[in-house]
Length: 216
Image (cartoon, rainbow, N blue to C red):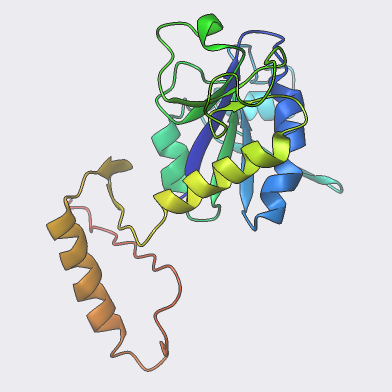
């Protein structure tokens, strides 16, 4: 399941620039990354466009061209929706913005500039920081030129979140599991899979999807 990490800050604080600087370092860490830009501006095309007409009919659309693909949907999604639908294809969701969302994040600015409603800040990126040891915490405070160190910090948090965990989703929502249930599910599934001829080594992630037959 993908680890969500937000690059948050006030408007024009340099969020896109920091994301652009972090991504090459994160890729060198071996992480598969999905970049998500969170905005409060309108992103759905108008009904004057072909895809806009389809979206008015509540049908997701794909804009397919020679240089790439753009997927458009009028459905409002949450972070849990992204994780459920695409979380198994990526290691890290690098989210630009979303300061009000509950996820680990780096704040662009000093602690004093961070609003009280912002939670989950694990690092600060501050151009005005005067030296590495000003706060006494080298893995929390970063300044321009230390993007590699910040990327390594994010990669570490990402890997810590993915250490042999079991995630259970029901109807698109994550179901919390205690240690006993997590170990019970993992042990039982691994035991059954180890008996299958086509599975020689259980050294990869395991994805299981169960479709429930709908009653008439």
